[in-house]
Image (cartoon, rainbow, N blue to C red; front, side, top):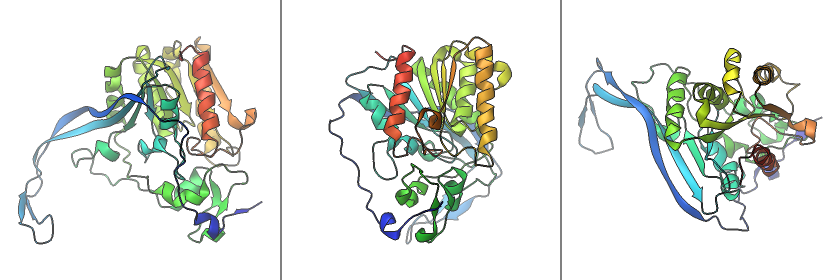
Length: 335
């Protein structure tokens, strides 16, 4: 059955929802963490004019470059109820914007978990967004998604079309499809050679001490691997639709790190997601076999239906944030 999107629906203004209560913070700020210095040599010296009518600049890119640092922004609520900081790690080709607000202007999980009393740290992984990128990191061409790719790849709809009247969303889909154009504005270039640098930067966030990691998609591969390397620093791991999991033969290192793995809807009808889901299930089974705690929740199985690969943006994102909060409370991580 088709769910056709009318031009009138797509023409709706994106108006932020107004919350009933103010957010009161005891602090907020940002910092960069990690990184290293790399020497660049052999680049030609160029003469550039940086703006029309400007004075030419002799530009020499050779020399030391600071690379592979990660940008982190934090918000500390006045009334703190979470026992540990909550770290929000985004997926591939995206930034911390994933969690800030929804494409149609509703509260995102960043705001929701601040309201729930968690110290929240949201990052742009190495190479993405405000973490920046340097020629010294990689000379490969990045992957940049065309507009249609997320629509079909991330279980939003079956057919994207430049003509909004011809786009077909999945029946019962919870993603705010009328704001799809706003959604794809947040995608950024992604390189495939920076995984180790990203893991190093995430591990460097140990300056915060023990934390709860909430990760999404590609970010979950980093979450599991960081937890394997520093299990004493990860008090819980919430993996939302992990594209990959950790190393099954190292799952025993997480025996004291409770994990919650969440999956949305429409997985059975997709070409790729049944396999990716199996990777998460196998890792969870290996954790349990080693004496650990790993809860896998298929949202449709508990009556929460219609979720895409982006439950933090779906219309029922508040219901899923409550589910995560309740799980953390059950694990003794909420005061």
